[in-house]
Image (cartoon, rainbow, N blue to C red):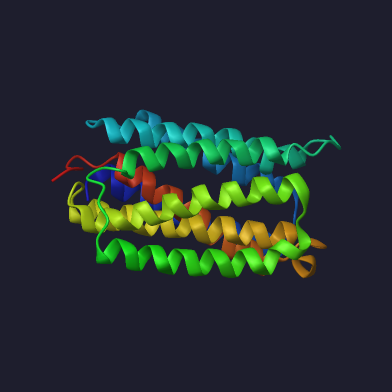
Length: 233
């Protein structure tokens, strides 16, 4: 790893631990929400500042722009005194972010036994989550959530499949795969926190810990990839 990549990990992994602690000390506090949003803004700014040699890195950096938009409506918005639910706009931001990542990862596309195996595993997990949550989600929200989940799952799958396609270096492919899996875990945690009755009625620090322990490192690893000088084989 180069010096920039090491600095990113040294900065953002301890910040992740700080957020996990604060969610227990100050559950659902506006102060913590503002800090979470500030962390993601600095992560986006880091992706803008670092030198990008490859087009794929620029597309990945664009995904963080949409992340900041999404987080405004899903995180920072709840520190304001507005009653209108604008979370669909936030979800749309992440939808665009994942489309960017799909475009960046979708190189040397092919379907082999490894890709099929990874796809079956992803489909099994998605179906389990869908049948767990579908009784509690209806109408337009159900349709939108299904479309979002399919895009998220495809992004995760194609991120994992970079390991098999020989376009990115082995090190970068591993980082992309781990980052994609962490993003998936984060969003599935968000889905349960929003829709599953037991978890949606009150703030659950342990569930928020799962979400943010996956969220910040997942996107940090993406910025580590953006900062890589030898991205491609």
